Length: 420
Ligand code: C6P
Image 1 (cartoon, helix red, strand yellow):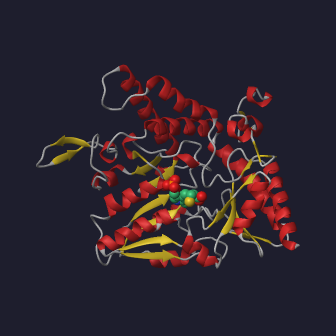
Image 2: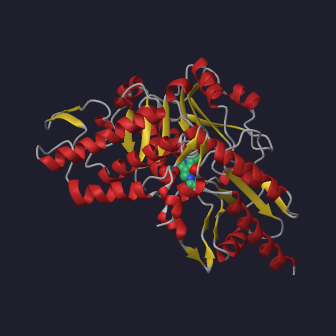
Image 3: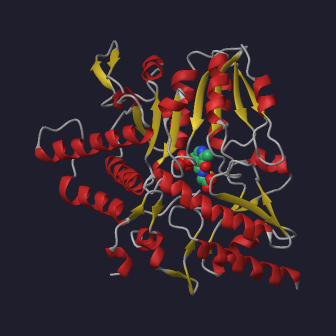
């Protein structure tokens, strides 16, 4: 075993031992194309620490049973593990009540649930939904669908060239016709941290609800849904060091109570007859069918892992690596960073002049460096910057300055090849 694995994870307030943390992630120890793996694609999905993998394996090895149904020991253990994960997530988000934590497949399903269950029954012609230019497709298309279904209209708040939201223009768009304001907490393509508290306040002042897409925020900093006072907040487990296929929709109890069920089936009902059915209590009203039990348990373990490291420590560590990376890329001739807002999380998108991002990504991979290249499911944003695609390095809690040196080394190779 690696010597680092014997040390404690935490080194003191606001610090953790990154080598010790890396030792928790078995996947990071491998070589790719003859080079040590440098994983800088955390915005797409993060790697999983041993304890998450162990929690999932432990469930299947010892406790596998359906939940909320059986009276036998395994079912009780599985139910307790799932409901324990719900309590862990409640504390992580500082939600007031465990009834406000709905397990879904991911951020995408959470946003679709809000659009179909809360918005669709109440919107009509003349109503407006305000989003921003930097949204991921998951926070655009569900609203387009609901606009088509109800006759409501989608309005889009512009951004500055830096990637910061144009708050003046945003404030003008939010008015008495606005029913919903839906915005990314952190942009997946620009790294911009939006002023979400202000956004929520503006929505509420206009009588609208506020929906926050926290897919890229939850892994990076403390989230306090009560302090934010948002009506809904979504996140994806797989970006938070947990398994795929699981996510969380936080909804204020009153909002969830007034929303219609999303899907019908087992577990979400109280009574069923052929004439009519009645619904289960929150949050089960929104959890039809057998849930992703292993996923919930894995997410619980991942959240415990992040909490143990400390979200403040994670944020401070990633801020240091982001600053280092920003300086290193700024110093490279022919490399332009896209997304330079003052408030940023660990996401660094860039253009290498004259080189398609796919070529950048392929050459980086040949050097063991995993980055993402493409439109990042944000086509309107690509259009805003006049680019077909971007290269993107996105940080996780295990990344180091040495990882950035490896990225920069691979970008030198890109330039060498294309300058010839
Ligand atoms: N962004 C990225 O590489 P799902 O697929 O449901 O787990 O998450 C969707 C989603 C929603 N909002 C934001 C801000 C996101 O970044 C994502 C996922 C990945 O940027 C995959 S496209």
